[in-house]
Image (cartoon, rainbow, N blue to C red; front, top):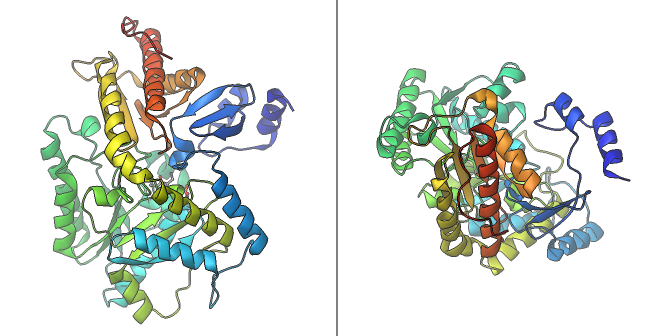
Length: 461
Ligand code: PMP
């Protein structure tokens, strides 16, 4: 079949996630056919550097034979069986052991799910159940953050703070409140980053007092907000949040679905910030996206209560601990470990990206270039000196994203924030290529939007 044939069928029968169905119908999709390393290939013969690791998940890169072999062997041995009631199987057990080995010392249990959204549904139920078992049934409120993302199920959407989703999603799950996000460039530039981080932590305390200090069960947040715009909080933020949570005895849920498995240069993003979460939802990089699997890593405090006092937990999924997915995830973790991928992100590739990415800060339409580990963002601005944004109607971010795509780079836009999050196996020369392709797209975006002169640097790729 040709590209147009796929596109016609796609248009006729396929409603894509997070997509304007009508606009897609007019434009047609890119048909991705295969992938290798950090590159995807389309049906038109284009090779595209995947600056987003799929959807922040292909940490080990594409085309890893070992993962194919792990899947094949498990499919032959035991393709599926459940873990309900009193049944288990070797891949689920071995993956659970490995995860608890990699996790901080106070985490010794995992509950498996099929995705990150299901992991956050599980979190919601576990947190509320925990406080009931503890004899504090009034502690039921969960606080999340505006612009946070915790999934697309009703619980995930409700825990998250994505305004367009709430607007379309109907009434949210009750008992969930949101506070401001620690997004200094977007919302805090009238003060220093440190003062802003502090102010965001104070907003948490204010919300707790507003809801009633005996009524708040948990605070859920991504260590670095991913889908909200690769938002690294100011250094003052997490230490101040930790103090507030300790003061009111509130559980911390660190959503590691994006930050986990090396993205920020540690096995878990919360380790970068010195956090000791009670619960950590995981997915994506757990299997490098090769097969769908998620879970919740559970700290001893919650796990022991559920085990000792909980009785039967009426919750679980057909694919909780799916053997083939678990076998692939286990192999993925073994490879990440054996190849020193996480250390390399922390000690070599992260600092290298930071240096190269920061070089884009001199671009006339870039107001800020930030990165941590292998996650980066650029803030597009119309006026570099004042930091004034482009008029929303210009759609600068989407234009830049489309120009990147046409040039052979997948970069994501969230409003006028451009994001990258490439596979963790990217090489230095591929980081150079990524940065050059991004610069070219910025030049072209600037030319189309503001007619500012091109930067002088000649593209090297
Ligand atoms: N949590 C976070 C932080 C995420 O980024 C995502 C997905 N982007 C999810 C949860 C939901 O994961 P899934 O799409 O696997 O349900």
